[in-house]
Length: 378
Image (tube, rainbow, N blue to C red; front, top):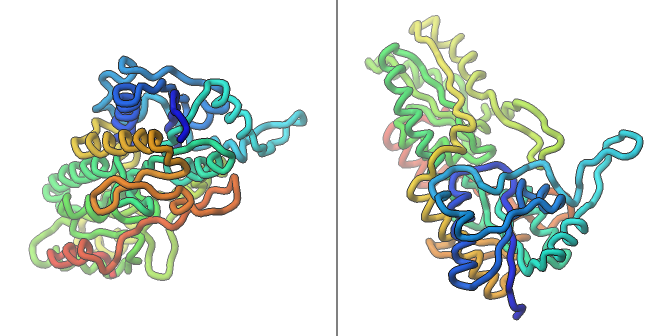
């Protein structure tokens, strides 16, 4: 068993509520229970590469519990095993600069590194573990799609934003007899749209796991109109797709581990429904894209507690010399799995995933939604 004296942490990828709760728990557990020294690298892997860090003590994390985002900042464009650089001729090249990061860890006498992030961040965590670094991973995403764990922090806070947004849209939809579409995040997993839509009393929920027929969606609106409900609320996941069709792509970002940026499905639905619905009922169709509001704001009770559990358990894993593993929740209990079980055992430097955790189209949650009259556009 290696004696641990000093640890480091970083946050990578996109931000979400609960990150500061995790950071707070790591620092408090490390100092108060184990008497470790702690530093935090700023800006994710970029800070590890440039040696940009701060000392983490009890004063550093005072007052951050409720805050969204992360006091350590983060980046989703810095794969140190395939780092974008410009050579002497001005040409863009990609180099493995991971040894510089490892040298920085050794310079600071870091015994273990806690890496908090999603697919891309954890893939690099796997690669650093392969090079002998004592790594502990913590999964982070509002999409709740990380395999091997039952829930991720930030998800419940994002659901609150979706629910409150749908509540607000109801008043305008009812007052003006409109069809209101709310587009939410989730990539290729429909958890946010599904649970947020149920909580926010959506009439139609469209998710990636259940391809929709636009005519079925339109018929739902007609049926509601004909029985006197002259408004309809649609909650659509950014990754939803029509039968026989594909996702709606907003942009391609080659510098990001997740290069395909989804978005625009709400506007597409509105254009299609406007041609079908308005000539018959006269209803206007309006779209709200919730976007980054889902990621920010005050962290709710659940995610504060969940983040605390993730952070404190990661430090306990370090104390037990459990490295190359990621914290998970299984059967409502804290546990861990090998990082390779989550992101795969592929080539170093290449982002991969062991398969996202997605909605079961025939599961209890979908069935319950159908039982209360919610349509999935099938």
